[in-house]
Length: 194
Image (cartoon, rainbow, N blue to C red):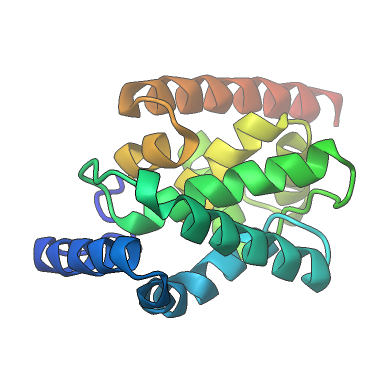
């Protein structure tokens, strides 16, 4: 079970960040501190989901423009500011997919596939099995794929996933376990037909 997100920050960091956010609300030039802190993680987040560097840069720019423009509406809800930025990023990515301006990409390394395979308890971990797992991931719809990416590839806690996707923590758990069951069935069918 995953307990810590690599994006989790300590209580004193959250308090410090809240001061910076309040300063940015009063003086937009102070938003630069937040931009510098989160630009690279948001860019990486976006780049893992879209095809092409230019699209990733465009979307990331839009994320920060939206964040700076709407920072007055930001309210601390017990989660790091980054969760709000990731939610904006998810919305921007989805908007680009809807407008067909970018193509969806899933960048998976072997360790991430192994982690998902372990969670699915797929048994024999051969190259062929990993290929079938990659194909099963390809059959997921966008919302399902986002949950898998956030939980298994980025190792985020369910509370943060809920915050990013604007759903409850419990709903993120239920949805993910349904996706796992769906993938297990797909893999079972693939194994029988192989």
